[in-house]
Length: 235
Ligand code: SF4
Image (cartoon, rainbow, N blue to C red):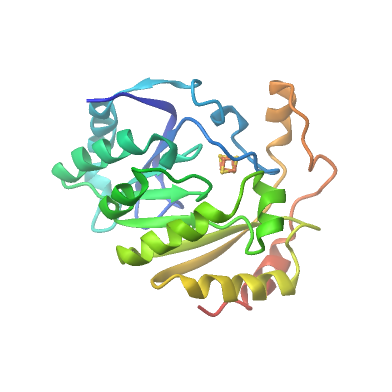
């Protein structure tokens, strides 16, 4: 059994997939999103060592609350970076009757990605931007893995919740949302699209880590405007 690296757990999560969920934030992310709220999750050697047994044990404690839909969501960081550990852990959870969701930025793909996708119940797909150049500007990584991952999701017929963080002056235009609406037509099974208003809580974390924060002068996203933009989504 291989070991993983863990950033943190969140118990009784209610927003990262259907039902009540135990959220497992795995450590390590190759992206450098300009608005990342967890810069402390970037370093693949950071966090702490964790084994599958511990994750199963934590997840089992909440079984009475999962109901029909709840379970475990693997987030990060970027969970696909620890593909082999992720597969091993999702299989162990399945043996206990607990479903798994992968919350991915689709900025990374390797030989484990397809099996990981085939093993999970559904995908939370964080699409940084539909335009490849803007995607790279936001995430610091190429959009290519996203296109490959969408093909794998379609191949394995997994349902998807699409998400995009909406940042003032970066992607908060009607044109952007119309482009996103076109882009996501590539995905065969969409259950939900969520536009998430950017908020400014991350800047303190960057200061503490001695990192510069590109959005330090950008205010929070107007929630009403995001509601209006959501009206252009009709998948
Ligand atoms: S993909 Fe997620 S964890 Fe990685 S840098 Fe972007 S927002 Fe942060």
